[in-house]
Length: 139
Image (tube, rainbow, N blue to C red):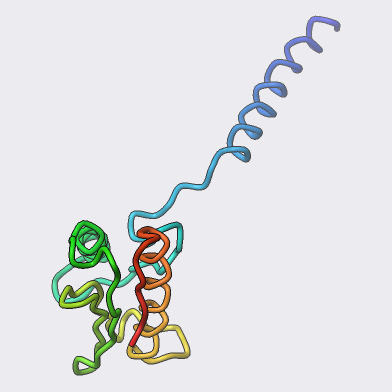
Protein backbone atom coordinates (compact mmCIF):
# COMPACT_ATOMS: atom_id res chain seq x y z
CA UNK A 1 0.00 0.00 0.00
CA UNK A 2 2.75 2.56 0.79
CA UNK A 3 4.24 2.06 -2.69
CA UNK A 4 0.97 3.16 -4.31
CA UNK A 5 0.90 6.44 -2.38
CA UNK A 6 4.34 7.39 -3.68
CA UNK A 7 3.26 6.89 -7.29
CA UNK A 8 0.20 9.09 -6.82
CA UNK A 9 2.22 11.96 -5.35
CA UNK A 10 4.49 12.34 -8.42
CA UNK A 11 1.70 12.95 -11.00
CA UNK A 12 -0.07 15.34 -8.65
CA UNK A 13 3.16 17.28 -8.07
CA UNK A 14 3.77 17.44 -11.83
CA UNK A 15 0.21 18.65 -12.43
CA UNK A 16 0.56 21.38 -9.80
CA UNK A 17 3.90 22.45 -11.30
CA UNK A 18 2.51 22.64 -14.83
CA UNK A 19 -0.52 24.63 -13.68
CA UNK A 20 1.65 27.04 -11.69
CA UNK A 21 3.91 27.65 -14.69
CA UNK A 22 0.96 28.16 -17.00
CA UNK A 23 -0.76 30.62 -14.68
CA UNK A 24 2.36 32.55 -13.74
CA UNK A 25 3.56 33.17 -17.31
CA UNK A 26 3.01 36.47 -19.11
CA UNK A 27 0.14 36.81 -21.54
CA UNK A 28 1.28 36.80 -25.14
CA UNK A 29 0.27 39.73 -27.31
CA UNK A 30 -1.64 39.06 -30.50
CA UNK A 31 0.30 40.00 -33.66
CA UNK A 32 -2.64 42.24 -34.56
CA UNK A 33 -2.31 44.39 -31.42
CA UNK A 34 -1.13 47.93 -32.09
CA UNK A 35 0.69 49.92 -29.42
CA UNK A 36 3.36 52.59 -29.22
CA UNK A 37 5.13 54.19 -26.28
CA UNK A 38 3.48 51.72 -23.92
CA UNK A 39 0.01 52.87 -25.01
CA UNK A 40 -2.31 50.20 -26.40
CA UNK A 41 -4.21 51.63 -29.37
CA UNK A 42 -6.24 48.78 -30.84
CA UNK A 43 -6.32 45.34 -32.37
CA UNK A 44 -6.81 45.02 -36.11
CA UNK A 45 -9.22 42.09 -36.33
CA UNK A 46 -10.84 42.47 -39.74
CA UNK A 47 -9.51 41.80 -43.23
CA UNK A 48 -9.94 44.58 -45.77
CA UNK A 49 -9.28 45.22 -49.46
CA UNK A 50 -7.47 41.93 -49.98
CA UNK A 51 -5.29 42.30 -46.88
CA UNK A 52 -5.58 40.00 -43.89
CA UNK A 53 -5.90 41.52 -40.45
CA UNK A 54 -2.31 40.37 -39.83
CA UNK A 55 -1.11 42.15 -43.00
CA UNK A 56 -2.96 45.32 -41.99
CA UNK A 57 -1.46 45.26 -38.49
CA UNK A 58 2.04 44.74 -39.91
CA UNK A 59 1.53 47.74 -42.21
CA UNK A 60 0.31 49.92 -39.34
CA UNK A 61 3.30 48.94 -37.19
CA UNK A 62 5.65 49.64 -40.10
CA UNK A 63 4.08 53.08 -40.59
CA UNK A 64 4.35 53.89 -36.87
CA UNK A 65 8.04 52.93 -37.06
CA UNK A 66 8.39 55.22 -40.07
CA UNK A 67 6.88 58.11 -38.10
CA UNK A 68 9.18 57.46 -35.14
CA UNK A 69 12.20 57.27 -37.46
CA UNK A 70 11.48 60.40 -39.51
CA UNK A 71 13.52 63.43 -38.39
CA UNK A 72 10.80 65.96 -39.25
CA UNK A 73 8.54 64.34 -36.62
CA UNK A 74 11.13 64.62 -33.81
CA UNK A 75 9.37 67.73 -32.52
CA UNK A 76 5.89 66.31 -33.08
CA UNK A 77 3.10 66.64 -35.58
CA UNK A 78 -0.64 66.76 -35.99
CA UNK A 79 -2.44 63.43 -35.96
CA UNK A 80 -5.38 64.07 -38.29
CA UNK A 81 -8.54 62.10 -39.03
CA UNK A 82 -10.29 62.36 -42.38
CA UNK A 83 -13.41 60.78 -43.80
CA UNK A 84 -12.63 58.56 -46.82
CA UNK A 85 -15.92 57.32 -48.20
CA UNK A 86 -17.35 54.87 -45.66
CA UNK A 87 -13.90 54.53 -44.05
CA UNK A 88 -11.73 57.04 -42.21
CA UNK A 89 -7.99 57.62 -42.25
CA UNK A 90 -5.55 58.51 -39.49
CA UNK A 91 -2.53 60.47 -40.68
CA UNK A 92 0.57 61.76 -38.92
CA UNK A 93 1.66 64.69 -41.03
CA UNK A 94 1.59 63.25 -44.53
CA UNK A 95 2.03 59.60 -43.44
CA UNK A 96 -1.05 57.38 -43.57
CA UNK A 97 -0.99 55.25 -40.42
CA UNK A 98 -4.49 53.70 -40.27
CA UNK A 99 -7.47 53.19 -42.49
CA UNK A 100 -10.46 52.46 -40.26
CA UNK A 101 -13.08 50.49 -42.16
CA UNK A 102 -16.73 49.74 -41.46
CA UNK A 103 -15.57 46.22 -40.55
CA UNK A 104 -13.31 47.65 -37.84
CA UNK A 105 -16.27 49.50 -36.35
CA UNK A 106 -18.65 46.53 -36.64
CA UNK A 107 -19.82 45.39 -33.23
CA UNK A 108 -19.10 48.77 -31.66
CA UNK A 109 -21.56 51.58 -31.12
CA UNK A 110 -19.48 54.07 -33.14
CA UNK A 111 -18.89 54.91 -36.79
CA UNK A 112 -15.54 54.35 -38.51
CA UNK A 113 -14.93 58.12 -38.24
CA UNK A 114 -15.46 58.15 -34.46
CA UNK A 115 -13.36 55.00 -34.04
CA UNK A 116 -10.60 56.67 -36.07
CA UNK A 117 -10.77 59.67 -33.72
CA UNK A 118 -10.39 57.37 -30.71
CA UNK A 119 -7.42 55.59 -32.28
CA UNK A 120 -5.87 58.94 -33.30
CA UNK A 121 -6.03 60.23 -29.70
CA UNK A 122 -4.33 57.09 -28.43
CA UNK A 123 -1.76 57.21 -31.23
CA UNK A 124 -0.90 60.83 -30.35
CA UNK A 125 -0.47 59.88 -26.67
CA UNK A 126 1.74 56.91 -27.56
CA UNK A 127 3.90 58.83 -30.00
CA UNK A 128 4.39 61.59 -27.41
CA UNK A 129 5.55 58.99 -24.87
CA UNK A 130 7.82 57.27 -27.39
CA UNK A 131 9.39 60.62 -28.35
CA UNK A 132 9.29 62.59 -25.07
CA UNK A 133 10.66 65.80 -26.63
CA UNK A 134 7.91 65.76 -29.27
CA UNK A 135 4.35 67.01 -29.10
CA UNK A 136 1.77 65.03 -31.04
CA UNK A 137 -1.81 66.23 -30.94
CA UNK A 138 -5.02 65.46 -32.77
CA UNK A 139 -6.85 67.77 -35.12
